[in-house]
View 1 (tube, helix red, strand yellow):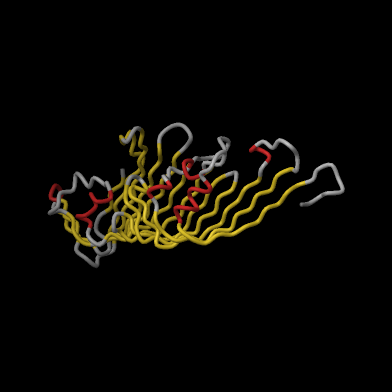
View 2 (cartoon, rainbow, N blue to C red):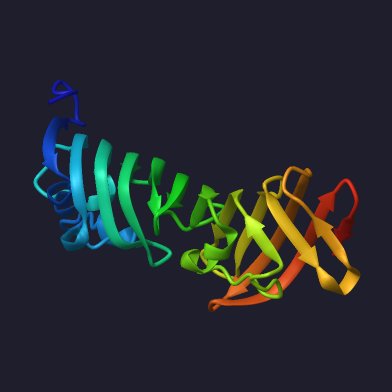
Length: 239
C-alpha cells in the first residue's frame, strides 16, 4: 500500500513463481488480461519451465477498471515447446526471455524452429497508436538450403540442382495493424553453390556472395517485390 496519507492510495503487488510454463500462460491469460491469447499462444499447447516475476499496481478503491491497472511480467522460459508456435512452425527446445506490460511484449532468445537453430527478437505492440503491431527479427542457421521448404519458403525459380550448401539467413518481418506485411531477407552465400543456367553462371563454395530481397505480403500472397539483389565478385544482379 502506498500514498495512504493522500487521496490516491495505491496497491502494489509483487510476486514470483517457478514452475510449468503452461501454468504461467494460464495465469496471464485470465480475464481481463488475456495476454497469451493476444500473442497467439494457446496455454494448453505449451510446454517448458519458467521463472517469472509479476507486478500489479492499481488504485485502492471499490471498483477498478483494467485501464487503471499497471501490469508487468518478466520471465525466463526454458525447454520451450509450442506446436505451430511461430508462423505455424513448431518451436522446440527454446530458451527465451519474455517481458510483458500494458503496452506490449518483448521476446528474445533462441530455439529450434522446425528443427532449424534460430535466434529470435520479437516485439508486439498492444496499443493501436504504435508504429507497428509485430516485428520479428530471426537469425536462422540453414544447414541445407534444399530444406528451405521446411520453413515454408518457396525457393522457385531455383530448382534443386541449381543450389546447394548452407547459409545463415536473417529475416525481419514487420506486421502493421492494417495493410501488407513487410519481409526483409538477407543471406550470406559464401558456403553455397549457385548455378544459373540461363546465363551459364556458377558460384562455388568459398566464393563470397550475398543476397537481399524485400517482399510485401497480403493474405499470404506476395503482392510486391520492391527490392532484390545478388552480389558476388563476378556477378551483380539488382532488381
